[in-house]
Image (tube, rainbow, N blue to C red; front, side):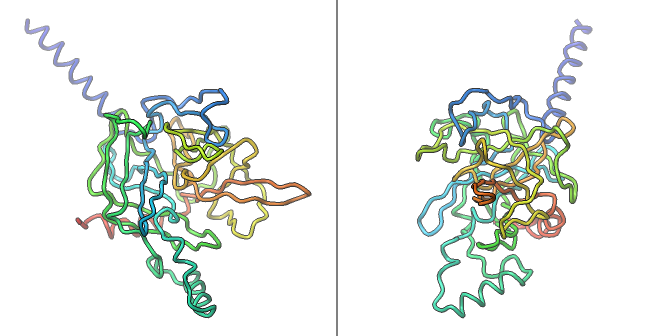
Length: 318
């Protein structure tokens, strides 16, 4: 009887250790995000994701001036390896873009845009959403049905990059949640790249994910994914800055409205790393043809900024 008790105790201990280790590792989904290769359920030629195979994926609902917007985001692994209360998304998801154009004179508009370009304070002249009007969900897959795995969080702080509507600079924002998100099989933080890491390793698979438009005015109920190949060539668009951005040729598809802020997650050393944030798309005319590019904010370029600003909000409680 005593022997059986010891065996049972050892089994339980190993089970707990295995569970703890599996939950504590960033970027290692419990469910493998293998694409379903069939031409249905498209995220602009993408595919329905395996449920909960992108456990860092956030659904962000924002209300600005009475209008509701939907964006994506990523739960990031930051210091505490079993939980996180930090989300990365696109700045344009939490900024009232319409206010950029509300000027009483050409001079006022000129002064505004010049100040936005040269001032370093990320809070200068940024018409931010009210944190109380932002809700963040994790563990979601089918957003039109009740799900036991889905958890809702409020936002206490928003820190945007020095975003500018016209040159798309610094399209990144940090959301501080009202409490920690504990990792489990359905929710997990994603790893961050190394400082100034330019591109994912050769041959590493990269995915974008979201609930954005799938064409013809249709929006999916279930999370969609698309495997992308990053383009390292020249993009002939004045707003593209290779130093701070990554891009993908959208010949076969890509992100769409509603996917903004979502992750560009690439496999590195058997873990998924957040290399980019879905930012915008642009049509470029070159050599008698038009090419469309999806552009991502390059996360590695903002790690120093994140380390500078995150401590300023970590001790604040709403």
